[in-house]
Image (cartoon, rainbow, N blue to C red):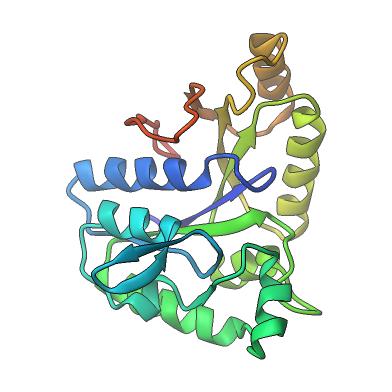
Length: 222
């Protein structure tokens, strides 16, 4: 069993959190100790007993089976719903890959598997020189790609696959999320992606405007 999975998407708002939580539940069902990690979050704050937290972080913590400190689960959180590197610059904070790597290692020491959810797409910047692809490369994790199924998704998915390969990482699987309920030729687009992505289709997510609902995912490598 790998120490983790890195969940990325073809864009922001494509269902990464729902997919990450489903992966976590799948690993937990196998009796594994599972932790979730959102290295950097921006916006989407909700009130919790622990204060204002990012809604994705709340979902990941709920799906986890190990109790971990918040600063390991979500080392950097910004209030503004903007690109992480811009939010960090406005806050006067530098996102440090060494910090993110150390927090991942701490989670991995508590767990059998850590599901790491990126923000936005694979190449979203973290600072002037690094992006989420660099973080995935630093953590050396296999990647699961959530494809937001809409017009243009084939190009987005293939470009993301090329970027993942360019970092020397393994695309372990992909998930088709129907984010546009009116998308024409949905099944044809899924089949086009099947033929072109060098990884198995793990699940198809039905249109869910509120993002709710259980999702069963075939775990990578199974």
